[in-house]
Image (cartoon, rainbow, N blue to C red):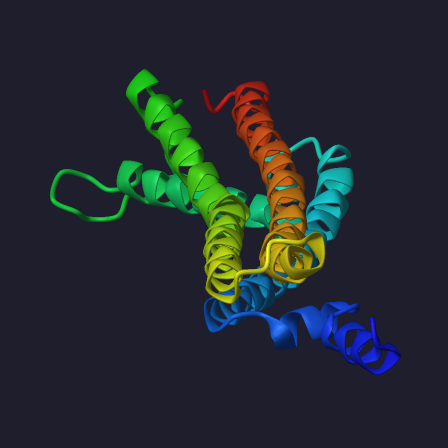
Length: 246
């Protein structure tokens, strides 16, 4: 082969990822643009949820450490007021509001007039069950709030490989059509087109792997917080039992 022709052929073959992208077909380039957008969305969610869950975990740990030293609900109420907002303070705040409204209702007569002496009656079984349901509902609301955006990571992690595979298949089809049109079937004619098509699959995996990793990491952390909130609600009721309110 003429050295000049060989040099032109070697220069036409893409050898770097950038050249593979620039030499790819329009369909493959469109797929790569879609994958780039999904990657930006994925990393945006990962960074936002990491910061949110990190702040929630730190505030919750600080509150839990103080809560273990409390022996009465009044102490926990004071602690919740001076602690930074966290899932635990919000759950306890809802429980405290429920108990406050319950005491106000118990300290009024049938006509709605206030009774001078505060009520010292214990909570009935239905009231305790209502409190338990309230704690479960608020814990579920906190779990949903912390989980916001995490399912998107699962969607990106499952859809990205399919999008990349679509780009690869379309790129390979285009490469074989080009080979059939030019009438050349040697490996030097096939390899560049196939490599350009496979760049879509590589890009899809680069998008999917961090998304799946982030989803599993954040889902496990949210599940752990949810379990801690459930145990926290049980400890509140146990504290009320020790104080004789139940």
